[in-house]
Length: 223
Image (cartoon, rainbow, N blue to C red; front, side):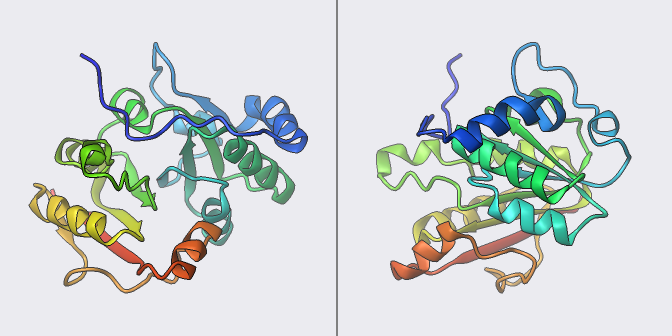
């Protein structure tokens, strides 16, 4: 069965710095999401046992770097398909010596479905996913009932799913889907106040400059 992808596989121009980072640092920090999908051994990957945060769609890595640097007790696995973003994140992680960050390339849903064990994640961050604004493309949005059920199954009980978007209609859809999901409960009454731990990225700043409101949703796994 052909699965609907939730991202557009852009390539983009990879600078010399980013190309060097991809070539030089991938063996140390990189995770390939590809068949035969070996189970993710996080203790071997990070060299320790620590709570794991999964960030889906890390972009250029600004939020990943800021949060991981401020949260050294947890490990961060950032998933992205855009090569310039992967290269930039690798370069900055290496420059700053962030031992608690690893980078995965490919479809996050494949990673979740085939490589990440159930009940194993402390948190999942979905910050500013592609809004697919045209109605005929809404089926490609990441926050859909089946995908949320998968996300919930990979969270540990008490683990947090944190979504953010600057598209009002997507925010309403997210809230509707998450409210209806079994085993998830809203940590706030409706949309959450902007959490201090989520950095303001350039992408978010562009949304604010365009006059769009920012919506945060925080849900935790209850069972």
